Amino acid sequence: MALYRCEGVVLRTHDLAEADRLVIMYTPDRGKHRAVAKGARRPRSRLAAGIQPFTRAVYLCWQGRNLDGISQVEVVESFAPLRAHLERLAAASYACELMDAVTQENDPQPRLYALLVFTLRALAEAEPEVHAESPAALLGGLERLLLSFQWKLLALTGFRPTFDRCIACGEPVADSAGEVAVSLAEGGVVCDRHARGAGMVRVLPAEVTGAVTGLLRAPLKAALGLRLSPGAAAALSALTRDYLAYHLERYPQSRAFLDVLREQAGS
Amino acid sequence: MRYAEPIARLITELTRLPGVGPKSAQRMAFYLLLRPAEDARRLAEAIIGAREAIRPCGRCGNLTDQDPCRLCTDPERDDTVLCVVEQPRDVAAMERTAQFRGRYHVLHGAISPMDGVGPDDLRIRELLERLQEGRVREVILATNPNVEGEATALYLARLIKPLGVTVTRIARGLPEGGDLDYADELTLARALEGRRPV
Image (cartoon, rainbow over all chains, first blue to last red; front, side, top):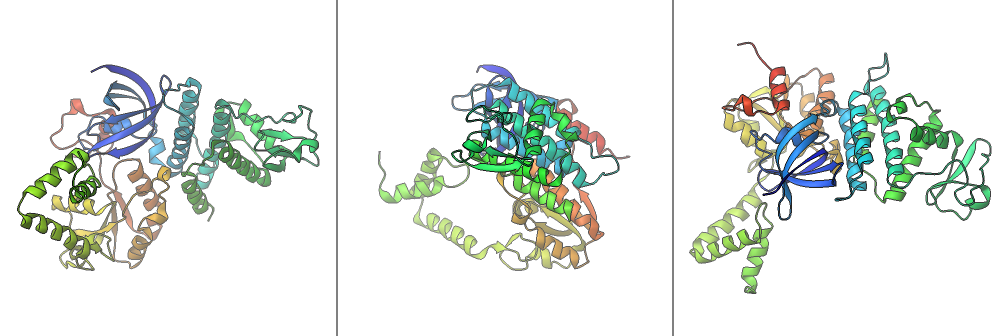
């Protein structure tokens, strides 16, 4: 039986047969990869701990006819805080579900893998603001990290938006009264002349497109320092959601749980 | 080869069972067909009987043939300790220990953000209503030690603590009769965290 080693991050698992788990991981060498962990639901399994979602590990796998299997696991980073705090767990679930949605098997993209590892590390280490150790403060920080993750993910998968000139004619776009028109379909700002013909146009505060440009340029963790007016923050969240849904044609289900936590933190 | 319609139908129905593939279903079907007719009738009656008589207990959510169930009405059990589990089969697992004499509450699932299962899909409202009756002093969170079980336990702990009820989580660590050398790092770390004076 041919064996091979691969490093990866577990995106999610599914129960399989009596006591097995199907592991869906993202690897820098093979892209999204599926493998079965035999007996992993039994308490004595040596594989169980290393195949939990969000875990980064090196796997020794065997080649199967239809499905490969995991024979040994060596954990590199367990990202334990992601499973110990509700807000971190919800945010990490969102990030991993999104990765699962946008990636393919046998399509390795090492930069996507690096982005995922940086994101999980940042979500595990993010500290609530000083003197504000509340779930709301922690959630705010995690949401900003997720914003940065989503735009970087879009950029790496070929959907980087253009905000410095009109996407249709290439002319510089002057904002009118601090607002710009963004076409979700075209993937960037449009000038007055081309706004009418473009699809899915949203008029947004220019502060929002500036924030996205900043997030794309800066390292992921810099997102923790992102400061926006309440109106712009809401518009940025809505733009991110709509842009993602338009280009990826789906939206992570984990968003609903993040919203439940946000509602509870606000009440 | 095409089977006669009744055999094909039986195989199709058996294939719907968890862990049963077409080959196993075929083996089971022929076993049943070659046994005396009485055996097949007894099995069919047992399935229909169980399906019709069993329902979730209105109080704890466990599967039962009487409502409230025997575990909820047993006067020998302790009303002040409530063990929260994910599935009815977890109640059976806890009962096999013969160590727990409190009451149960079955959630019928666990929070799974990626599968779109949220708190509203579980029997959490019923749990809070039971706690508001004021008899329970301790809630033991016995959800599975995986991501979904952990999310559920963390969420419940946050809801229950403000009610003034002690919330505990079942311990995690080395299995009985296990070998330290073969334990994985995370389990060993948990076992160290949960060490106790002897």
